[in-house]
Image (cartoon, rainbow, N blue to C red; front, side, top):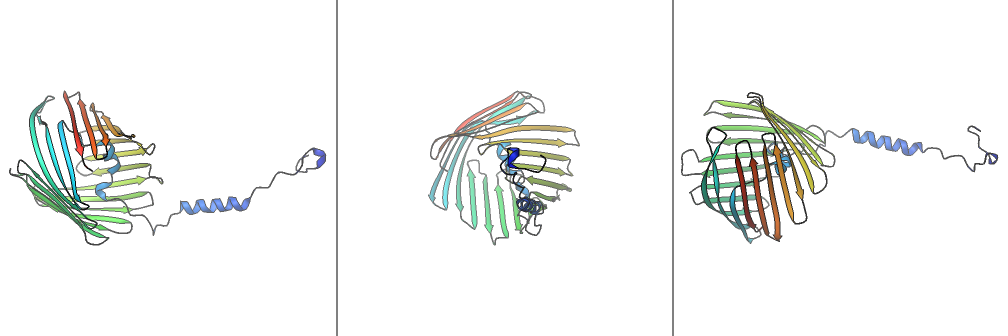
Length: 324
């Protein structure tokens, strides 16, 4: 009988009226979420690290031959490392065929890591010495110095960085040899979107460049997309998606508009109970796989494989890493 209910109609009580108070509260909360406080934006990642999620998936530390590493801690802040490598070095011939030459290196390292500073040093059997120093002066200012000395001309260079951090931005100044000057800046635009740019000047070649970048990260951190373009003729688009807590998928598109060369890559990163498996394949026909198997706490077995059918270049490597 329309909107009139009675016991004669067979009904007991009219249906409950909607709770307009709860609906209004939900709508008000949604509006508040849609209007973020732009005076309290989060601090973005550093400009150098905007692709860190994709790099972890698409750029594993592949190698060819045999590699053996030992990391030995002497105290909570100081540890030594030994690295032995025997494999092949690719030599480009200007054609599809690649030449290989056998190489063998040993590298000794000493590392000091503290809350405010970090000292890393490496010395190889061929006379190359490399080092890195990082020091945090305050919570908004830190500095890094990287140095490499070699026995051959052109192998020695140095780079010094000064990192500045704000509440919702960061910047970096770079000075290096020979006659290199760089500056980058990254700013949070919204809670999920960051934008910035970089410029560099290389006096020896009389060359300069400007780059722009965007980075978007989802609310739950499960997806990250980045876009970069540079005046040197390079455009790079990347996207990574965390399907589960242990599986991540990533894609990459690199385009050189000057030469009209483009390359697309897809890859995965799967963390299993006793191992971690990463792999990728690109439009150049190169397929890569990298496996890290944990034998016991502190002992890892690694396997690396890369197939390049276009250049008839096939690589396989294995090794053991002892120590964390």
